[in-house]
Length: 137
Length: 141
Image (tube, rainbow over all chains, first blue to last red; front, side, top):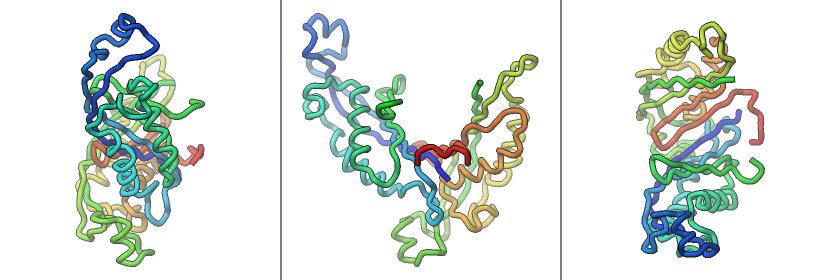
């Protein structure tokens, strides 16, 4: 029987929202204080939701140790205590939490083989969160 | 269609062990959850029902009734219990959070009459939860 399993992880990183497509004035207008050239940071919470049939022998959708290991190597070691603007995926994309959601979704989709990825949800602060379920939804 | 969610908490002990596996395989697969003396969690249960809003009462479901069904069918059976030893469903199934969500669904679904069960969500810890949408939720696995 199919169930959805969600696990939450946390990392801290800095970023600056600034688009090369915009003038300095336009950047300040669009991104406000997030455009501060020195950057700022967040404690991000990442929720990964996977689904699949519950294995009759183990009672699991997937082994949490596999998901935790993947998240540690694939996400936390990549993003924790980093400046997001310096990472290759944000060389051309503004490191908004929308784009971070898509980047993390792609990492999990590409690399995690033990269950079907349903959704990546990121809380940038306690007051705002973003979700990405892949193209087509 | 309106969705209504009611939360509840229960605390229980469990351990993970499959009789089909050797002790070494059990230890490798389940890690510290395999300790036969058990360990426990404060579980949070969210039960979501759906239905049309009754024009007379303005309710999707009578919350008092929902609470009574949750108390009788789920909390009385699971709260402050050792799941493997005291809850019949777990005499033969491993009490993972996945199976807990399925068992809670199976206990509640036949007892709800006004509204239909939409989702059972079980938090094992604030950082881990399972959603079950019913046996008909066949979608892509």
